[in-house]
Amino acid sequence: MRLALAALLVLSLVSPIRSESDPLSGNDMKHFAPDAVQLGWKYFQQGNYETALRRFQMAIRHDADFAPAYFGAAYVYSAEGKLDEAIKYYRETLKKDTLYVYTYANLGYALLQKKQFPEALQMLDKALEIDPTCGEAHLSYANYYAYKQDWRNAEQSVNKAIKYGQKIHPELREMLEKHGVKLVEN
Image (cartoon, rainbow, N blue to C red; front, side, top):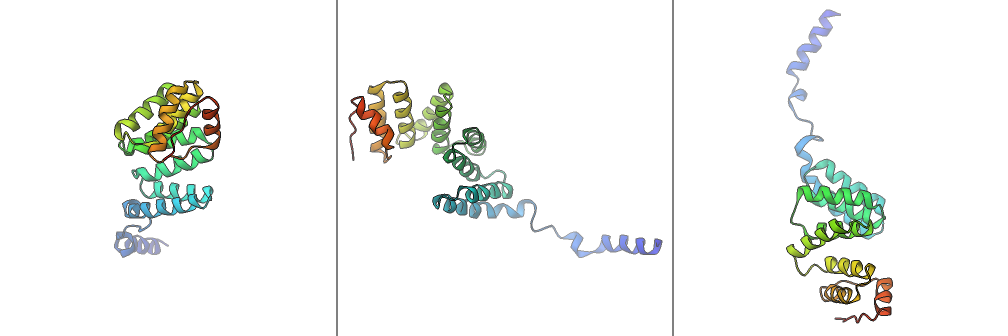
């Protein structure tokens, strides 16, 4: 018995399998993260949010520093109305990449929905600081001003959003028009 254990010990020390790294662990998998994110967006566009989320989470496992993976997960959670999870993942995205304008715009919108107005407005302002043509941030401001019944500012913001390519949700359009807001279509 001792001889067999000794032989196994020697084999484990000289075995070539021991000297090779596991190809499915560590930094070797980072290069798969962009492909997983790309697949995530394809599933999202097909309306398959569950599989999209799994792909984004897979990308996070492959590369914990890959901001687009966190953003994708946050976006899915937003679309599903899971705002706490969305906010968490948007915040994680910002830890990895502080210059992606849509992270600020979408985090701002999620915070608006949670009625966390001061921070929401900070995020929207940061988005517009990075890119003054960010239609999503302007649209979120339009929603905010409509909520506050500040129709003059809502009109300015919604028309900037339209100018920068945003589509206006029919409910928002109806509410704005009901209060005399004139929409300037492109």
